[in-house]
Image (tube, rainbow, N blue to C red; front, side, top):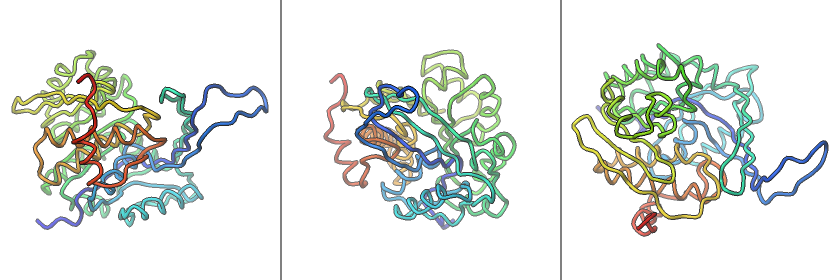
Length: 317
């Protein structure tokens, strides 16, 4: 089958407004000076589609924005990265999902989130058919794409598999009920890509091997579990498993690092790379983003990311 795109990235699209560094919130009407304020396309889909495009993939954005000025900025930013936004829905009378991120000096941050369009979006039959024409279909944001959670997500992934797509799946902020949303999707998921914190909430264990075996037992083809500063752990249904260490970098902001890891991994899959090299490219992509402020920060090109993958010092080496 001829693919219309390398990847369709479906799910939550959010405008992030990042401030760095934020050490305290001034009382009353006080003012604090910070170094930088940056806008970025984020969300578990938005934070993945931008790295996919910058790493050279023909990417289709599939989700929703509102009818406000934030929507204009998000769509224009994606167009500037060469992303096909023709399947993005603009929802009348609804704000674009957005988050304010006051980023601490150590790179951690609280989040002030307004749900908006991504929580109300539900893929139409026409758009679903178009999304399933890609080589890879990624669904990002399970647990936050409220109108898509459950049967609509299962049907999307089932169609994607029937059409021959490689499917990847991610979520956000696992809670007690998250496993019930994820479990029906796993038989149609080639690569499940949670963080270890999310996986531990669902499985009840912080051990990545135990988590991977649990999800593979529920039907996933493989797991790529982000371990934060400890790198990532990959395990396949066939029994292959390995850990890829993180690179030794100076972290500025961890916003979008997990999503950019996913984008890097997909960029390797599209190129037919071995899973170890996919994970190394994903790790380099995430590392580059962590050196800047906001999702997609400092990520320039596939060539520069491959150079970083081959030259950055490995943590603990």
